[in-house]
Length: 352
Image 1 (cartoon, rainbow, N blue to C red):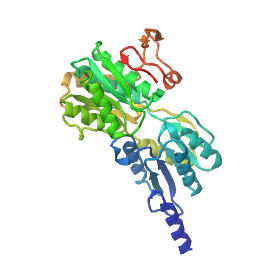
Image 2 (cartoon, one colour; image 1 turned 90 degrees about the vertical axis):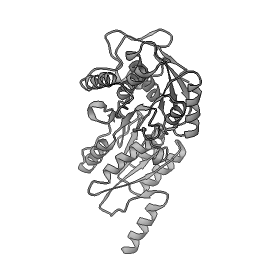
Image 3 (tube, rainbow, N blue to C red; image 1 turned 180 degrees about the horizontal axis):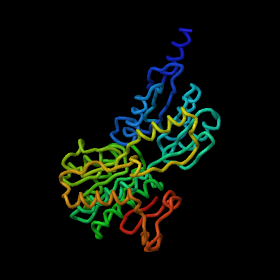
Image 4 (cartoon, helix red, strand yellow; image 1 turned 135 degrees about the horizontal axis):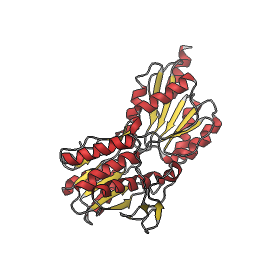
């Protein structure tokens, strides 16, 4: 019996960062697309994982820097074969691999972040980060002097496009002359590439740099140039204290705790979850003292309005060609926002 337990523990440790667990523990696995030390996306998810570690009878493990595609399928398959009760996959490109594995292990609960597919034992989740993006855009729009804001973005998928559009709407609400220039890196985490992309935007006159990337590379580029920046995923002010204005941030802990509790209680259902500011899943990092108080007050007032039900994507809204996409007095539906593949007026760049 003792030998069996030792062998099981040894097998679990292979290729994974695993907490000490017993047969009675609920085992929860996480798959990350970048290192947890990225200060961004995976870092934020891992903070949520650590909240699970505080629960009685719950043990967690993770695999970091897992490429999207076949490699992620192998990692999830490995976790499922070892009897993990819940598996969270935290990148868009993990969706189809997770769906494939979920069909093979009907007694395991699978949760995919930022996707749209579900199965009997697989749900999906994300957060209404576009709400916090709008608020950070307000800050950037108030602080730019050149009226040119640079945006370093990962991939042209609806999640990222939606965030850029919301950010631009927020900036335009404070400064109608603002334009937002987008550069695609085609990577979630590559600090050097992200920093170089930011530099290219600085070279064309951007005096505020925003990002949908995992590393603080764009923040560092802004500080080196002596301009402002807006981070993402977590408060990145420590990496660029003289540039960092604020950041839209994640707080995954409550959601992960609630999900695991539902699995333990047998009340979990395969659903799509999209909580926002009102639920505390997304938020705005503290604004720098560089942001004038009157600007901070306007941003906080808007935050409360959004929590109270005010919509971000409220018409009239036109796309880059001038075509009306959202009529005056109407708000975009969730399906339309989730499928957004076009830029609004004021964004300079392509969606390819």
